[in-house]
Image (tube, rainbow, N blue to C red; front, top):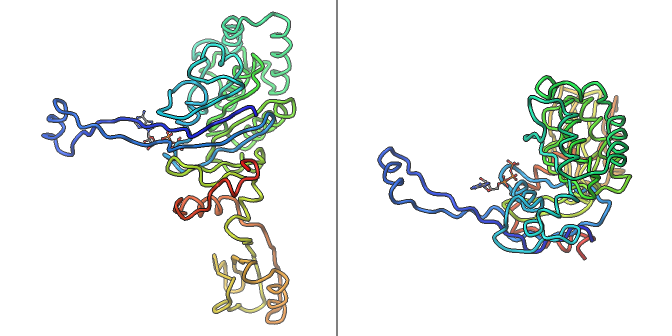
Length: 339
Ligand SMILES: Nc1ncnc2c1ncn2[C@@H]1O[C@H](COP(=O)(O)OP(=O)(O)OP(=O)(O)O)[C@@H](O)[C@H]1O
């Protein structure tokens, strides 16, 4: 086991400000503390070599968890072991073994070229010349930043900068890498490059934990997904299980010769009436089997076109975010990895 998180809790204390000017002034003298339970007892484990997508709506507690796991923040309660270290206790030794890329924060220095920042990291981590040069050459080659890394950072495009952020995070050959929104703001091509880089590094044995709002990141990279909501894990299993979780639903795009009528057919709901003859439907195959649905459509209408797809992952996630955590089964029963 490379990562073990047990009953992790983090409460923040903030102070009430008051709604009116008078209350704000009064709060300067007598502050009323408010406790925010950002993380409410998270437990999960990760094996070496996994890529886990860590998802959740805004304010769910993802960044807080990641900050604790990288040793930036102390938890209120709970235990964390990453590579045998307690991140916030063994910080100095620990950071030599991990990497982190935060899409919204830069580790590079604005006025100097990335290459100089890479050499700075070499000094900080006391990396030996030869292995450093070998790793640098490999990473530069993989991300194709030979020219780019010699320009001052502030002149780089977001995509070029992110590639250099990844090099910065990987130079000391970390075994575990934490990624917080690593593809935020990037164009399609840059996203693809970053994703294939993560995949390549994973094939070479690096374990990744990845928070993102971009579900394509998750679909392309992660085999396992942990979903948090209101500081609690509401789902921990494979992408496939996530799709099946809310029932075996499919989307069907159908064009018929004449307008079709779906009222009163259980298991079929109209998502969008594209035109008189074309509709996007949601089919719940637990209520109406796919082959029965196809037979029924065929019997009633002349089909001009039909495509059947798995429910888009973003719809599944959206539904999952709306589910009250109290009504969900225990995630332990959902996750083969936690059994
Ligand atoms: N320093 C802080 N002081 C007080 N409250 C905080 C602090 N940092 C985060 N919070 C609160 O803790 C909760 C969890 O925040 P967190 O940033 O971990 O969520 P997140 O899942 O990463 O959200 P996002 O997707 O928006 O980045 C939120 O309610 C947030 O307002």
